[in-house]
Length: 199
Image (cartoon, rainbow, N blue to C red; front, side, top):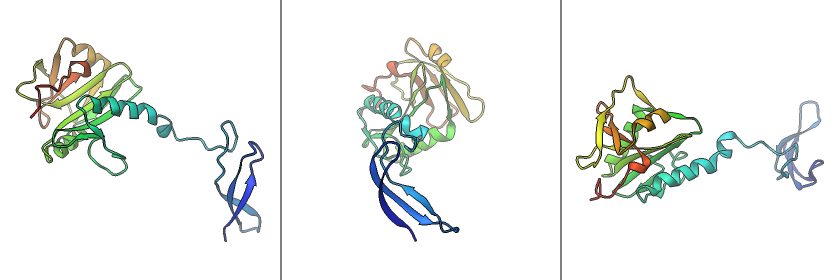
């Protein structure tokens, strides 16, 4: 049977609770350490990498949402909700950030965002930040005021790279015409929502 005891950490001297129980030999073992150890304490748990990078991806999500004035979808990943941000009945935004110089976008991920947005009369916007560039992917519109070129996609994914950023300069966009909604890849600084999808 578990017992709760109050103790001070031997290393950082912080007082807290331990949950203990007797093992098969009759010795006490720690089941759960509930002490909030100080930084630098050997017993302080190491935070998982994905949580230590949380501020970086939260800032990326904010930049993506700010492109169209979308509001954050709270715990979108945990609840399996589509989109990191939404502007109801106008935009649905999904954001991916990476410290690498490329991000592989799969057709299935785009289609999930596209279908979820379209089912609610919203436009999908996929925002990607790599180590050297920021990209926006939107559904093709007749009044998209850019010079667009066809981009051939081999397989079910496309690499969004810093090299692609060099190709997408001077108001140029690439159309992935074989994908649902014929998405257009743009540099984020070439994207302007006014007059494109406003209803």
